[in-house]
Amino acid sequence: MLTIFSGKKLFFPVAALLAVFLLWAFSQTGDYVKALPLVMRPTAHAAFLLFFAAFTASSIQRLSPGAYGRWAMRNRRYIGLNFALVHFVHAGLVLSNLAFTEASRPLLVLAAGGTAYVFLFLMTITSNSAAIRKLGAKNWKRLHKIGSYYIWVLFAATTFRQPEPFTSLGTSYVAILLLTALALRIAAHRKSKSH
Image (cartoon, rainbow, N blue to C red; front, side, top):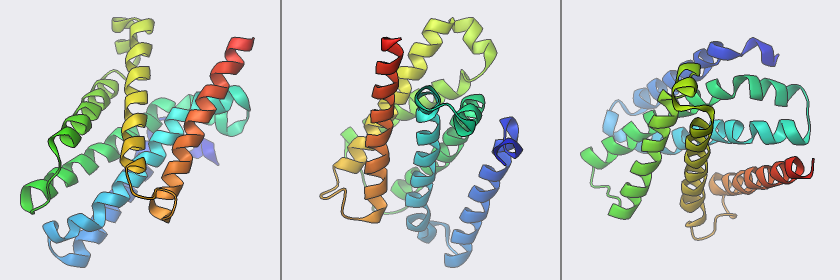
């Protein structure tokens, strides 16, 4: 089943679901600005799930090799690009909300989020073989590692700054997956060091 959605074919279901969701939300309100509160959180959560899949792919395959791990490793680039697609759409929605409503964000939050999007942009445009050759494997890996951990930290900061991150379904599953992702990364690193 997983092989049906591999490589570039991963873009079609994600892009289609995103488009259908946005069209549905806008049709419910009949107004772009009024629809923004309906679409910002779901797009952030969808982006996070794609990030989690890309961030944990190598760790899962290293710790417990199997069909999912092999599929995730083969498609990690495309999972990451889908994450970028959804998260950049989310950024557009957030910026629209700031521009067209009375909503605001502290300067520090905007700076931290902006930095994450700079990393995401750099990781997106270097997610190809030509960029790996041009940057060199070591530099490419360093960029993507720093960028992915920075984005993890930003997701964590956003989630754990909530008053009680484990009490609502909307934040508790994100908090659990964030901790799970970090635990998988640490366990996989330790396993690789022991061999």
